[in-house]
Image 1 (cartoon, rainbow, N blue to C red):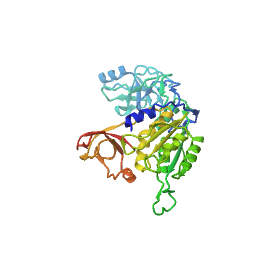
Image 2 (tube, rainbow, N blue to C red; image 1 turned 90 degrees about the vertical axis):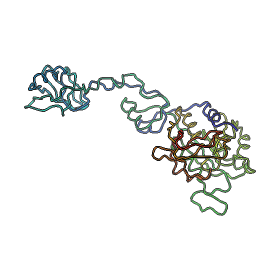
Image 3 (cartoon, rainbow, N blue to C red; image 1 turned 120 degrees about the horizontal axis):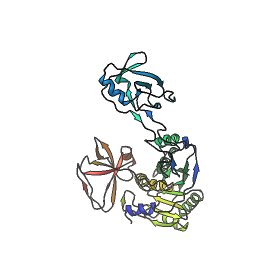
Image 4 (cartoon, rainbow, N blue to C red; image 1 turned 90 degrees about the horizontal axis):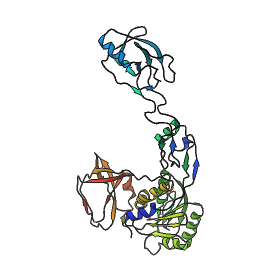
Length: 397
């Protein structure tokens, strides 16, 4: 049995050769960038007004304070997208809209609410001082600057960046093909009515949803019965057209848990087959050439959690993304204790009033508890209690 930290290091330490493809940027949401993105222009591309107001010279604002009735002559109106036609000289201003190009000669913009018009084309400054109110050329990004790094997960903000620099067909990692196999003679598909001693297969559809959210391409391979031959045929078929295989069930030490033995028969190199974690101890990981296989426990909470903390980072790293989730440090809402502390425990919590509260949790078969959980906290080996108010690291789910 290996420590969770060691198991994760083994998983993430594998060599990956991600395939790449170019896709329209509108379809790149959720994909991993396979190239750095450089800006093809300065941003802003010109000095522009940050407010609606009047572009003028700062020295003229000082003079208007000395001679209160001194107006500025408005020489032009500059809407966004328009190139100014006239330079602003002494005693002059130009009406300008937010985002519009600053005219030559102007070095500040007075907000419209700090002015009043005294006559046609005459503007009086009513404030004693003003900020520049200018967004200067290239103050955000210079042409050639890297705006997105290879391995970045593309979210809506990244879509906007791709659009702003004209990268309409970014290079992204091809989504890995991930086979999902459920094992167990007790399983029936969700549309059926379970007979005595039977249960519905929820694990496969939970995992397929998690794979899609990663994102990757999930392929359901059905339910394998509790026989070595059925497992061998199903796993071999999954290896024939997938990059990663995920099984649930059949990995413990019971009489009908054949998965580790079948893996060896299929020339899978098993890198570990037990983790000092609760839930999720009987987790198997192996590789077959450039393909990989996870054997997750059959209990739904175990498979759910192990996917989130181990399989999802693995799949994302396959696509070049090395980001790990940001942990939130929050105080515990109540006292928590446990009797056994030989394994690291991942405890589901909900967040209320800025504190973490363990949800009612009856064990690794109690998937319903996770419908209320917003995250999990780690209770380390040897630790038996967490006191109310003690700070814990919450991993979002």
